[in-house]
Length: 133
Image (tube, rainbow, N blue to C red; front, side):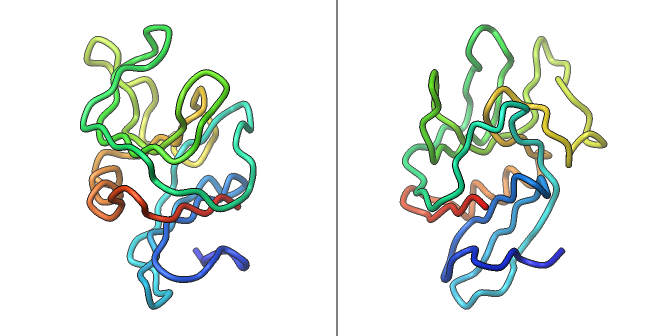
């Protein structure tokens, strides 16, 4: 998949809501990795440029909505922070399948396969630019 036009410059993470896809972009503009994700069913993010402000190896969702790993937060929603993380599990059971990535499924965040979540986690220390298109 081609990196969206007008998605910024330099080292960054790009998330396309329409394509349900993430790109990890190196400082020279080359794509290090791209993959399908599942964003929010509520279209809760405004297009724009954000910055990673917090990271947690483990996190629990609101209203007992599951456990997530490799949580990288970059925006503030109405009730909680919005970020990238693994597909949540509840009592050890995945709340969606990998085959469902590419379709909106979440309460607000961007869900990723575990290998992709680890890759983004390693790529995105606090301060990393996130562009939502």
